[in-house]
Every structure is written in C-alpha cells, then in structure tokens.
Length: 286
Image 1 (cartoon, rainbow, N blue to C red):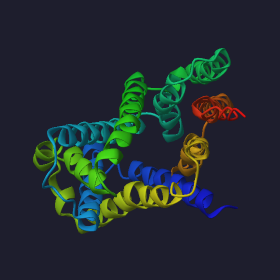
Image 2 (spheres, rainbow, N blue to C red):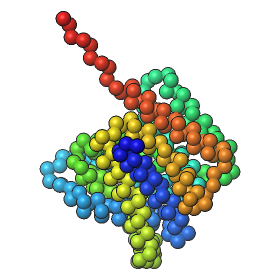
Image 3 (tube, one colour):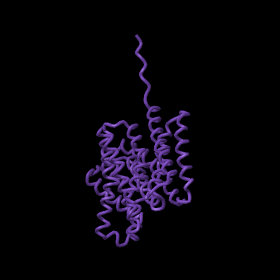
Image 4 (cartoon, rainbow, N blue to C red):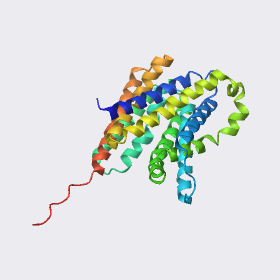
C-alpha cells in the first residue's frame, strides 16, 4: 500500500482512538475540561514546533487565522459535547454532514443528488433508533459538522497566507482561549491531577498532533481527491474505536447508516474532484 495512504489511515485511526479514550474519561472530567486539555497541549506542541513569525502580517491574515481558530475550537468542543450524549460512531457520522456539504458545494451535476440522497438515507436510518439518541447530542454533532465545513474552507485560506504549520499553531491558540476562563473556574482537581494531565497530553497528541502531521506529510504526494475519500473512513473508524475501547456497540441499522454516509462522502469527494479537473487543452492550430 502507498506510504501516503498508510499515513492518512494512521491519522484517521489515531484521532478516533484519541476520541474514544477521551470519552472514557467523561465520568472523571467534564467534556469541556477535557477538550480544553486536548487543545492546550496540542497548542503548546504546535507553537514550539512552528515558532510562527508574527511581524509583517496584514489585517486579512489575522482575520483568516482568527476565523480558522474559532471554527477549530467550536468543532472540537461541539463534538465532545455530542459524544458525551450519543455513541461515538453516530456522532462522527452526523458530523460528516459538514464535509459532505463542502464536497458537493462546487458541483452542479444532477448525479450528485445521489450522494445527498444516500447521506439522507443514513440520517433516516439513525432516526429509526431515535429512542437511543439524545436530541441535544444530535444537535451538537450537527454544530460540529457546520464548524468542520468552516474549518475546511478556512484551512485552505490559512494555508495560502501562513507558511507550514504557523497558521494552525496560532489558530489552536485562538481555539483554546475562549474556553480557558470557564475551565479554570470549573475544572477543579482535574487541572492539578498528574494522571489526568498526562492523559490530556496523550489525547492531544493522538487527536491533534499525530493526525495533522500524518496528513501534512501525506498531502505532499497524495491527490486531494484520494485524501478526501480516505477521510470518509472516519465514521467507521470511530465506531470501531468505540467498540474496542469503550465496548460501545451499534445496532445493525446504525451500522447501515454509517455505511451510507461513508459511501456518500467518498462518492461526493470523487465526484467533486472530477468536476474540478481542468479540461484537456485544445490542440494548437496547424
């Protein structure tokens, strides 16, 4: 298997295993405190690695990285609130409505309605098991999906304006700041417990630093369309991580919903990549 593909798969597995371990700590630490620890530790690591250059930046540069950071913080906070209330695999499946929307936004072809319909079928199948789903958890997953869509769009703008991981490091700092006063007031003993702090560091590495590094290296040689298709494995990876780490099982209809969303995102990504591909140049006149 291609090395770049393995890196993306490793990143997908890493982020979902980190999420599963985080959920396993919710009886001891609130989701808000845990997501703050994750963001704080990953921010420190990224700032140490990047040491971003701040001088000579335009107002537009700062506005882009501010928006990117707010999207990043909202996405992480909302998905932790979601899987505190509903199964991890289902939360990530619903969250993928955001990337699916981004993949379809640039397409005008009627066949792409197939992917919308397939994703809609997945949502309907999740509704069949609605008795097991907290509506607030579903709402947080949808919010995380909207923030993920914004994150995708703003990451492109950030990458165009900031070198390397400079933009991500600063965006991570922006993401962690709004939660800081609340967590310092409510975090209690968790913030001075060496075990919790060590686990927070591990979750930050698994859920942020490792996957981003894998993706960054992989995207140097991997087409963005292939990358998008591989990322559609996230819902299935989340469901499997939840089974292994948490013993959190899904019903057959919920597995079918996950499969629908995975196929819809993969199909929409491949379709949008074909739509964006430039037409062959016309032959030069004799």
